[in-house]
Image 1 (cartoon, rainbow, N blue to C red):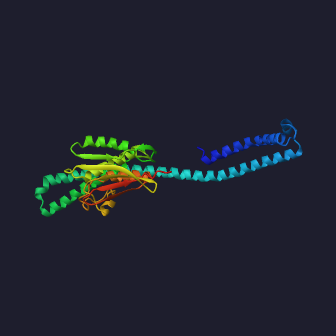
Image 2 (spheres, rainbow, N blue to C red):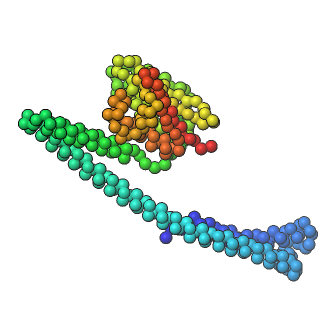
Image 3 (cartoon, rainbow, N blue to C red):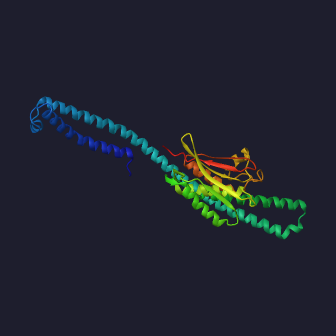
Length: 318
């Protein structure tokens, strides 16, 4: 059975306490011989008087009492630690079961959704001429619902595939990551006229892979807000606020209102409520999850018709 940290500490305390007893006796003999000039060190060790024996006995008693009290405290701590470890193990097993159930349920729902969509498409293709206007309306409603269900399952799959775990913080140059993302986007979207402005010497303590994904998602989101007929300008920069680094991605797109800005990070928002906003909000939802793992904040501000800005912090611990 694996020992807890408290049990390991108790063993170390007992070991060093036992080692300390002869060290204390030798130290007392050296002090008496060197400082007070009472006989030699050898005489102090081999033939001590009653006073010296009593003093050394008291030293050993105090050391043993300290060892006993320390081990008694660590024994109680070890019991609590063992209970916590057991609870953590139970939670880990429950989380694993929940993840497996979620994966199986998502797979079954995706299969059912695909079957429903294909059936409705087949019915719409072969039998639409036999339906009256009312039946066509109902069939179109079923088809739209099945398509919406498929989109929501795809969003759920994308959010599930996001890497889990605590971020591995290291000194990261965000401007280097941004330049890599710019090269990738320019290759993927050669038809768009895009100008990127990256502030130099952007750095912070964060997970390099996660922050690259954030920058990629925020740049893609900014492109979605810029009309294809407009020359796009996207800027990545940073400013200090209350001794904290605040990074931002600004674009010259169509912008959005304050109410719409609050719904940008909702992956399952109803696109019919905000027809002018991009339908794909997975990128911003992923960015919010990554920032939350960094104990940071992310929010958006914009003006309709005058572009928008997404701000985020990594909340680097001092």
